[in-house]
Length: 316
Image (tube, rainbow, N blue to C red):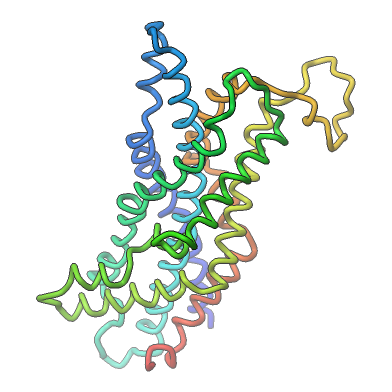
């Protein structure tokens, strides 16, 4: 039991370390696909199509920050699940099955299995950007750059975008958000169609078990909780820019203290544009720590670990 607990806490801390180590890669991938810096540089040259560039900047800025929230949440929950599955296997290797049998999860399998995260950083991310950008265009496309928005109105707009993205999954070829984390089973197997080694077979088994977890109702509940927390943190960051001016008589304790403060969309865009550096910040990342400390995330991770550290599960 002591070994089991120590392994669980080890993989909790490892989750934080691995997520933080991958955030720079995720951030650079998002910045590469949604390059707003080139547009801001163009604006400094005072071009004739200034309004058109501002409209493009509006869409890209909102898209990349919203994608940053989604992809960071997906990265956190996916790695939490993967590392606890491996943790369960390692527990069995180190305690229950110490009779000279071959390890259930040898190092090569662990590496191959964890490398599947590249889907989220690659094809999954590109598809996520496409879906989010379409939703941002639908919601913010008609909004004038001169129109003023309060923080509450901004929250409502983000809720509309989330609804389009998350409910849209049901009517698209991707049934759930889990597709952005892991490709379809057929694609994985097709790419391994011939010359499968014993380690390949074990890796595919791990991937299939993970996919089952990601498609479970419990996981969807956990992911939804993470996304809610992520967007709350995002809005909290934005709230810093909607503070009443010094000398404002509105009580700080008033629930509506920010509702009467509005900013023109043109002034909100640069603020939104810079949020990715806070969301995908590896040192320190309060955003990621918040997600990992959510009770539902810890409970789900503990359940995953318990499931895969039980010998009966592996006999199925």
